[in-house]
Length: 369
Image (cartoon, rainbow, N blue to C red; front, side):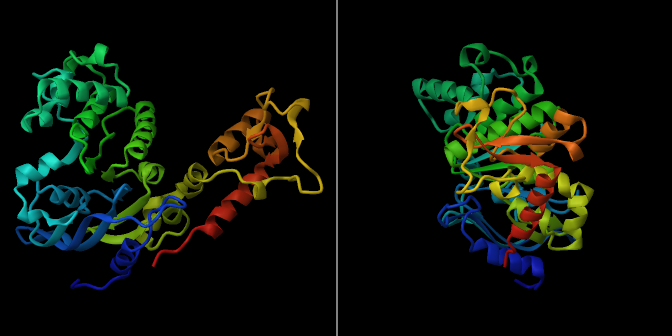
């Protein structure tokens, strides 16, 4: 690289790290950017970016408007041509591949979906299979499979037109179309930005499940730090010129911002974001059970909670706060029993438990590099 800076060094080190999910083996690199640069009439949009996306991971690029994140994404499938540097997909330099053939191998989802208005849902999903010469039976079966996968009943949706769909339904169709030929890589540019907040949260969760089930490598762009930390295996925080400010798992980005630019992006919602990332653990509890004081069954039975006022080990910390507030109207004075998977009481959770968990998360967040 022509420039040495902490973000670039961190990116290079993180490229060699194993995947973010606990217990997962190190993964091969699916896409690699080597000193990639993009200039427009003397203006530098991407300045010597080096970055690797691991096979099977969901990597999210986030940063302020104009930082080069969408340009970076579009260079991966040559919708934008790099000025210099190399982008390697698998073992091939993308600039050595016919751009049309390349795009048929890479799924692509954008904010406003881009469905063809004169084609039905089924015809939209079948776009790339048709270009590749699939026979009708294979295409029809694949369309039905994908619509089911994204939560749309083929019998009810296959013959509908795009204007008959809600924003969330159109987005689902867009994802199905992008996955039609089972591409090894999926690029997503603000994919949920045009959906209402409730639908957006639901689509995010459904997409996370889908991506994990399929094992597709995903490179996604968003301007929303909450979306980034909620969805990503690793988050890449970019500043102007696609300078890597931090490349790390979501917890590390939130708990240990690597630069003032990252801290500014995380902002005042840092604690709330930690609540979304953290889970209730035994060490967080008030009066936890020990080997000398075995756990007891709730309500005299091991069948689980009955009152609706209990919490489970592993509950998201945001849900713990909501339950405490709902139980007492004042989280500072509330305490709720906590059950394990067998339905046994293993301690209690209070506001102190949440504070302990936040301290634990902050202290445990690793430091890349």
